[in-house]
Length: 254
Ligand SMILES: [Zn+2]
Ligand SMILES: [Zn+2]
Image (cartoon, rainbow, N blue to C red; front, side, top):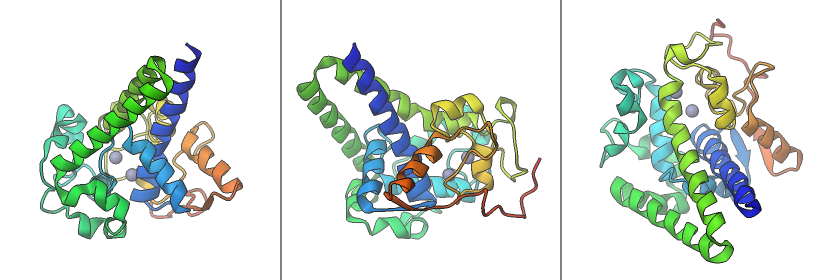
C-alpha cells in the first residue's frame, strides 16, 4: 500500500507538471528558459501520460490561443462539448491552416521532438506514444511490482484527462470567474486549478499567455509556478516570465 501511494503521488506530479511546465509553459509559450536536460525531464513526464508528440501538442495549443473560440480554434466548446473534449483528437492530418513548420519553427528542429513527431503522420506519432507508454509501464511492473504498475496506470489516466477537461470546462462561463476581459470564453476554475497544478487559472493564462505564472491573485495557488520558483532558486531554471511584473496595459480587468 505504501509503495502504491508513493508511486501514485510521484507519478501524478511528474505527469501533471510535465504537461503543465514541459509541454505548456516551456515548449508552447516559451515562458521559461532552462537547461535542455530539465526541459526533457518535464516533457518526458508529459509524454508518459499520453500527451502525444510535443510538436503536435504545441502546434494545436498555439493555434488555440491564436484563434481562441473562433471557427479556426482546434477545440473550442462552441463546436460542441464532446468535440471539445476528445472529438478534435480524431484527425489523421493537421488542418490546412496549422502547419507545424510555420507555427512551431522553434521546436521542429529538435531531433528528439522530430523523432516523436514521426514526420507529421499523426496516427504513427500516436502509436509510437502509446507503445512507449506501455513499455514504460512494463518496466515499472518488472522493477517495482504490481502496486506501482497500478499506481502508474491510475496517475497516467488522470493526468491525461485533465488537459482535455480544461479545454471544455475552462471555456464555459458558468463554471468559473474571469479576472480579465479577454475576447475568448476563458475562465478561472479554482477546484480544477488544484487538480491541474495551476493550469486552470485559464482566463489569467489567456490574458497573459507568455507568462510562466498563471495564478495572479493571492488565493490563486499555482503549484507549477511554485515548482518553477524552487528550480530557479537552485539554478536549474534561468528565466521565468511573470505577468505580475510585465502586465499588459491593453487588457481590461473585470
Ligand atoms: Zn483556452
Ligand atoms: Zn496556453
